[in-house]
Figure 1 (spheres, each protein chain N blue to C red):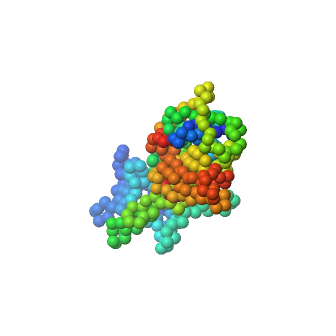
Figure 2: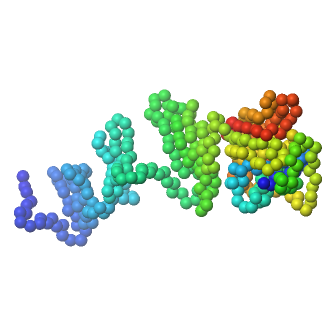
Length: 98
Length: 291
């Protein structure tokens, strides 16, 4: 299972995982679904990467020491949801805060 | 008494000539007529057995421009539908009406359909409604308003692949009935007495490993922002951030603190019994309100 990582408001690595329930409600490939998750739950323009969770360290005791280091070759930026998507989620506007 | 009689053949009353009617008079006043077009008119028409069309389905009661006014049926009266009269609407004295499917064979349920004839259903359109009220209540004002209602309202623009609808359950307290509970197209039951969202998840597996949340309702994603700090992002935003939540985790002696919520998410910090924030391996969260 892939996850979304980005540099959070606390200037730390943040890890976002989708729920199986939400993923099942979406169409497309797993990557397309994760991009949709980022567009929905991150402010527009947030830089993030989709990574294979098996590449993450097994030991998370030092989670707060982990850093987000951008890899321009795979880094993406969250985009606006469509008006119809905003309406579907009962959202009046794009997510504003990290 | 005078009698018009034919004992051996049909009796013909003939108003001979184009457009001539047959008129019935009593004491020099017209009391009925049969026109050249075959329209029989009288103040009251009485049938001792039945009032029938010329064939099954052969005639209507009224027309699109000449509609009857009231229909009176006696205590045992019923309306029978269909060539087999398999569906009936029957008066129950001092009680109400019974709509019945009279077929006795297996799997012949009764379907009562509220069918909206609009050709373009848009978001927010009412598809149908059942209303309850006491319009003759003598105290008036609030007491005669709709006291309870069940409505089906479209969630979006209907299309060949979309008929998303919410069922609204409304009750009145003082005035028109208002939403108390809704069942959405995606199966959520929204009321202040039902969870708005819930999730169980291992935060240790968010930080590392491979597992995703074990189960969730109305949670799109979970974000681990730092050790022990988890944000639960709602799939469907709440209408306010006036929410309350209960959360637990599986560390003996551990605690959890709410630290933020908006219409889009709710966020907690989970602590080990030693006071340090930790990404607990078993976290349960239930959120209420925000409907």
